[in-house]
Length: 421
Image (cartoon, rainbow, N blue to C red; front, top):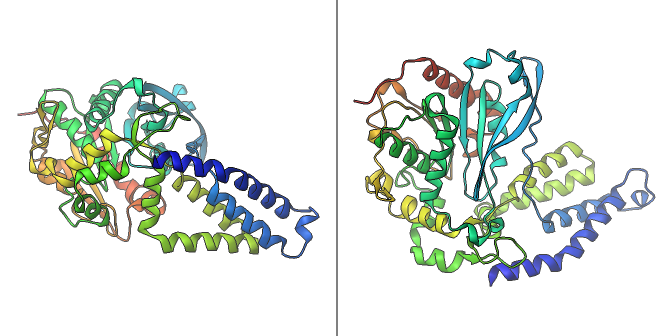
């Protein structure tokens, strides 16, 4: 019922939102007679702020059309390599690849970026992908908004997530592949590779795990506390909704994106209020660059997707409440997840010093579990001064983190792969 009320409110707000957008353009248009009226700048700024608060935020585009490498610009094409009901596998293919003239292409390693299914779209990793493209063939998991998946396509659980990751690894080719997981997927990625190793399958050359909840008992954050202070039944009763009839996933049980977004904002309401006030003042003063930066950030931040209920509830229980992975008690469809079975895959864990989503030690816990990986094939990096997003996006990612990720991948692309004992 809550989802239906949200949709009703959204429909009620739509005319006011369109009106605010029109007024912002009329009073802000350069050379227009309305823009010369007293108070026009304040009116235009206020209307645009109202428009942006009330508008719908659709999934953004990756928008990676070219990549600059050593001063040369190469075109980039986004290609769909595989499609499943709840995810697409995308590749960002440099147009010059086929010409064979892009930095010894044959030596460049394929990298699968496993994006989080935790509220925001995979486009949140746009900077991660763009940077990796300098030196690698890049693939990414592009998760589908659950409200757009018909009920007839079945449910989607954490077990299904693991199977998706395994299928994508096999399709790309594990022999030369490197897997980068950011935040939430560190857990299912570790499980997927552990299960493949236990079966005797070829596993990727390396796995890079960034800011993920491998063991949330280490330095728990507010996010971790929320998941443990209420029983699982509370999450099911209060957060799970049915998709309304105006979406193709009508009737599917989901954790709606609008509830997730409310939770994101509630973590730092003062910061978001100040950001919107600053945006208003930038518009009034004509600081267009700062205003554009605000739009870019919130166009991404406010675009959220619905998560399948089965996946969400299973994640809360297994990862945050029962800690089955670090306790060695996690079974996936009858198979025990045992990271000690991994031998041929190198491990790099990365944490931010100021991460308030995955506390220090939560990702590093993977080293304690992956005892079958040789000491020389395991590394850890703590990024000074970085929060959660700073380890995979922005200046610190590009200048401090990525060079170490690049060098780690290069070392383990060249070295002889050890055999399992």
